[in-house]
Image 1 (cartoon, rainbow, N blue to C red):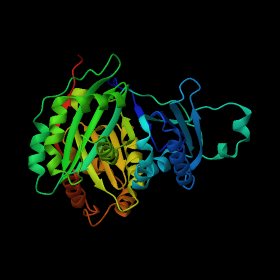
Image 2 (image 1 turned 90 degrees about the horizontal axis):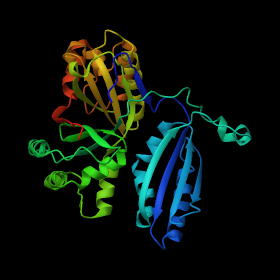
Image 3 (image 1 turned 60 degrees about the vertical axis):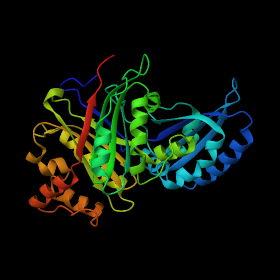
Amino acid sequence: MTATLSERISQSAFDGSRLRVVLLLDLYDGAQQQFLEAYEHLCNQVASVPGHVSDQLCQSIENPSQWLITSEWESAPPFLAWVNSEEHVQTVQPLHNCVRDTRSLRYSILRETGKAFDLAPQAAKGRLQASPRLGDGVVRHALTFTVKPGTEDIVAKILADYDSPSARVDEVTQLRRTSLFMHGNRVVRAIEVEGDLLAALRHVSRQPEVRAVEEAINPYLEQDRDLSNPDSARMFFTRAALPIVHHVTAGRHKAEDVRRHALCYQAKEGCGMALARLLAGHDEEAADDPASIIASSTIFQRDDVVVRLLEAVGPIDAQPAQVVGIDGPGKVARLGRLLDADATAVPTTEQGISHFLTESEMTLVTDRRAMES
């Protein structure tokens, strides 16, 4: 379902509300003790992470192999910084040997009741979500990885030249759109799903046409992987995940009037989340500006890489400052402080902004919309 005109949609990791994370696990038979030891180590690590409030470990009363870990965070950004860090990847590695399957769910806390919440000290950390969010029935996710310099054209041809897999996953889930971009030797694949994202990703990974493409690009990847080895594949896709942190749709434009673009920003070390927050604030303002050519914006961020997926009406160089995300002198200065000056020229003048737009715009390799099957 797409947004109708005048239907504004906004979802963000930056609204300041407390976060509840739910991790569902299915353990291998006989792996409980190993799991508990790994969990204790994980607890000791996460307890010192800024923004972490509490966690609970639960075991099913119906099926002893099923476990549940819940954790509470002051807000989404500190959790996302932790879960997407290399430290987290290494910390959870021991769990992989004893867990058959996992599923991670993230929720902002909208309401809570009961005396325990009034008395618990952690209840004062962070705030409740102000109001329910309006969605559009689409789940957005992205993957990113780099290829060996000099192989970009070969990889682009491989990634563009394949048959699309079946869009229908099950009775409730289907692929809606897949867009693939490149920026230098960086590849970004943006995915839109109606229904269950995890089910869709697993469905796609099993399709022979997709597996053939993944195997074909293996020799050109900077990070080695062996897709026949579950641990190697899991580690690769864990590091490749590029989570969504913000999405806004203005709801003023018809789908046939907009074109898809993507911009890649390289932040200074440790500044990726702050840069994504700055761009998210700009895009919220643009959504309320009738003169803006931006119909929708989706921001993905991991570490110091920020990718901004835009739907725009007309050529984006018509409003370069707005498209880059820095219309206004204050934002120019803030963006300059957050960008990695060694990776790109910091835009300060009108000419510099236009140059930055040209340099940061990603090349669209393929953009495929799925038809209802």
